[in-house]
Image (cartoon, rainbow, N blue to C red; front, side, top):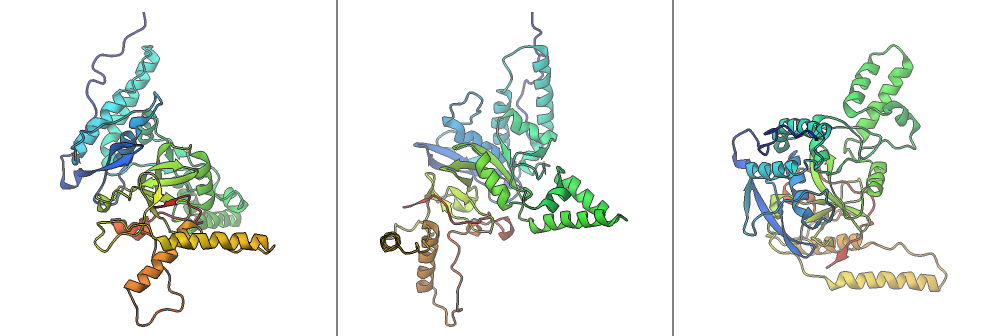
Length: 387
């Protein structure tokens, strides 16, 4: 007969050890996700909180068809949840991953994983020690912290990759992790070999020039690697975000508590690396700028729609006349241009600059995120639908 698992080895869900503090209470935001009223957990302070990123995936996976997907459900009247409750839900999901195969090897391996997980769980409320490798969007140095993602079958991604078109950087960085690369830079600086010194400088320049921790090559690889409709965790700048892919584009879940009552602010685009982003609703439709009080979302603007019609007409006319196609603005660019015009009407300036920069479309700072934590953007090619 097959040996049975050790009794009581995983009798109780892992729980957080520190006592509850004021910041350990999280507001629950209810959204319309895939046709059903679905909860998501917000946070009042922007910080490294992989707990919320994981929990929100478990909440959004209620409609998952894969048998390997864990799920969490909350009472329909739930408005506030504690870190202890979140840990209990997470612990139950982890215990539910126990293999049905009762073979001794699998059971012992599972018990070891549970033991490692219990050590890691308290860190989920503060920050996990993950160490990226610059060779792939799923490449991390394996540490005990990674076991939580493995047990729950949640993909963990980053976008900090070396550009393969830069042979010097590829050579200098190699397959090293971030920590290993920092050690190499320090060693090379004190080397007597000029070649090592030069290689160390190249590696140091790579870290400095990609301090945003998202490169264009990394974003391309991330977009290609993530599966359509997949829910995963995106790591960047010591912050963990819930990420999904919709119609070929990447989005991050907006968990800022400042948007708790903004039902049309659910996702934030992630499709470039230069500091821009825009907000979308639960169905990935582009959200319009908020009012002064931030309580409502602006209604559809017919001028924007007419401008798009005019752009289409210009393209058709140029094709008919055999001319070069004019530069056509994307929906995002049109929205930003229109928002700038409205901004100028409501905020006249006595001495305007020759080329005033339009305000960012629904900037991420509106929810309290520091400028250094903003999402990065490269090209305005977002596939959003204007409401």
